[in-house]
Image (tube, rainbow, N blue to C red; front, side, top):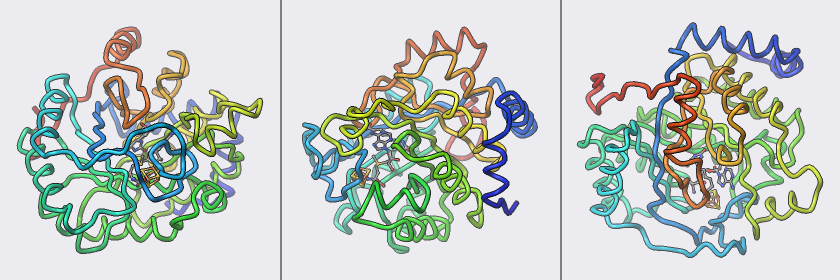
Length: 325
Ligand code: SAM
Ligand code: DTB
Ligand code: SF4
């Protein structure tokens, strides 16, 4: 559907109970409402990134204290993937703090994709901008998903990042699509943007020629030493309002009914009732484990307890060949 900004604004403006009812109805029409997909993140190359994303601990423009590392050895990556699989994860997402991969990095990246896939895990990579030929190489290796976020509305984007444009990001998404890889694209809520920016953010995703198969909705994790982390620490409005966050999840669900909506960063500091509202509003995927890329995550024990309380279960995992296991 071709959503207009007005329609998306009207969804955000609905009484909360109406919005939630509508989102939950869309959700259970297309997805099992008691199932949540489990994904595990690994930072395969941390820190020292030349980009200036104002939220990110890994930018070399930030003084967050995150140490820069080299690209991990593929064997060490496979060990981590095996642990994730044992812990019940379905998808293994590998992230690198790059503006874009260099051609000399590609053989190691391809080895990681092939190895993780052979284990029967879905593979996802997030490596920054991709050329059409790099996207082709990843597709040939069997990469299932590529994550590249638009992050915010076109208007707010420029306040958060100056070293690459929203148009650059959309080009990479087109290259990923063109190579036949599933698209994972979302953004961050709580960077000091307005409601109208959240409208523009969802509108950009929901009017892509094809909706991203996965839509991560992150709540800003304010990191000391980053532009946005420090800015928010100095203002009373230090964290996105929980109800507004749930509204954003609900509007993503209604406008992109078939996508997996991932309750991503920021869950660690989110109350159980807020997370429960997100699941009701249509979130059906989370990151497991006690670490995201550099920031803390809720952790498997907390998640197991929450799932038990809510009667949620891990979605059955799909092997690389597409068979339900
Ligand atoms: N360097 C690659 C890129 O930016 O395309 C991949 C890794 S990057 C860390 C992936 C995404 O994580 C960003 O686009 C952003 O949406 C999210 N992210 C990064 N730092 C965050 C933070 N402090 N809080 C919430 N989300 C964050
Ligand atoms: C996404 O949208 N969220 C994940 C994943 N894509 C790569 C990353 C969240 C990063 C949170 C900050 C950190 O760990 O440094
Ligand atoms: Fe680099 Fe990605 Fe962080 Fe931006 S979000 S500074 S591109 S690692």
